[in-house]
Amino acid sequence: MTTRAKYNVGVQTFYEDTGYETVQPMAPLFFRDDFVGPGKLVIPAAASDESGMDWSKKIVGAGPPTVAGVANAVGGQVAITLEASSQKQDAVLYWDDQKALDTTKGLVFEARFQLSVLPSVAAVQAVIGVASDWVDGPNNNTCFVTVGATGSGALLLRSYDGVTTVSAALSPALTLLTTSWAIVRIDFSDVTNVKIFVNGVQRTTAAQIVWAATSTLAVLQPYAAMYKASGTGVGTMKVDYVKAWMNRA
Image (cartoon, rainbow, N blue to C red; front, side, top):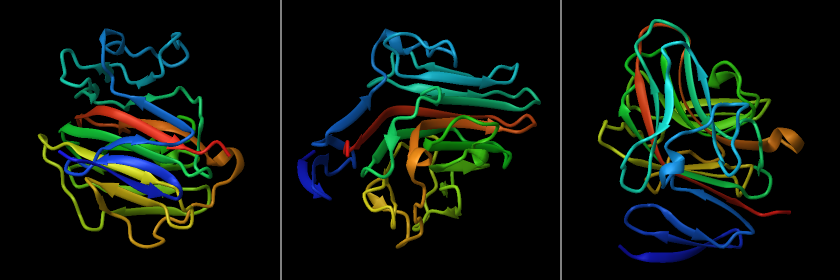
């Protein structure tokens, strides 16, 4: 492993050049969570936030689906899991709608994740990225940019800035196995050309995502979810870490 440095619109960033992970950005605002330690095994429920905890979970369904830390996982992990009850289910790891990431200030979001149980049918949707307030179904968020999958491990990119919807397979395409880990990086350094990288490779084409959201619409939160509107489909996403950095002005 070698750690190298580069500049991205004036922000010096140190990265690990074989595993694709950003090690340390020299940005005014930097958030990082590796989900390490016993306090991360229990994620508090939405509207029951706990002092010192960055995260909440949104649970829809009586099965129920779950959002919980993985015991003794090397490096720390949170698992987001749908189960097979025939019902609407939503399991979300997020900031309980406390949005603080401004996409107009050079935001970069990065996370490492695994689809340890692939979405079993097309009705099951996995997403990870940044989004507005929770609503019923990730396709209905007010604004968002995510990577995800439906019915397989084939990754899709999706975005909506309040005006334009983008929904497409990655280019070049990428399909995850249940044993695969992927590092996704969403880079808003240029809002006229938002870039999505997966495992160090840019997967968006030039100006595929032109981000028009401004003011409060541009301020988002981390959002990782497994969702189904109905049926017995299953799926599990494991999240290893979440990082985000940006300028203050």
